[in-house]
Length: 244
Image 1: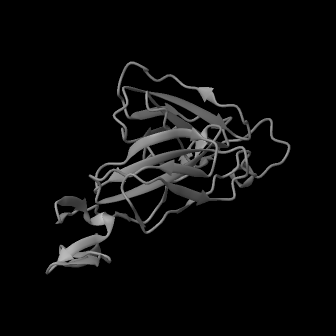
Image 2: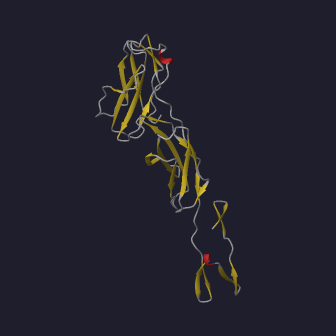
Image 3: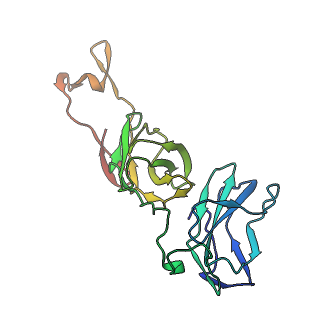
């Protein structure tokens, strides 16, 4: 999960439960809410919105058979949710289908996107980042980018399509992407692309043909007094032969 939440898998009635998380995106505050038993409504819980506390604790009540928590970071908008936590000794007074933590989860699981990208791209030429999943059509996506091994940075949020166009810079050597699905209050884990090589653009060569200066791209150079057609130019870059 994006905020790396820590929590127990079970807790006894009357004991204190503690939930902690990481401040992954340097948020200034957090909002905590809970679900109990089979209720689908999230209930807000007391947590100072003006602090950067990364933990929450409370006493477990006897009317809880299971419980889970949701933490929202502000201003990043990142939302992470725990799994259901078993309450030992607790009961659900409104349950018509005993079974406690074994009951069906009312919120569907979001699947991790599979990210598809080209192996290499050319600077200043657009390419597509594509992904697939089985989350249906009501899901949105966050896309983040890492350039030259740096920290992932958000490039688009709540994107509705499963494709996004990007133009690489000539200053990039390698770039990679990660995509996650968003459905209501839930987010999936990140799906990662492989490293994408950004090809090198070499400067144009200029030659003099008679009294006229031409770029090599024009296709002709003077060799020992004879005008000849040029073919591909290859150069060695860091031990790798590349086409100019």
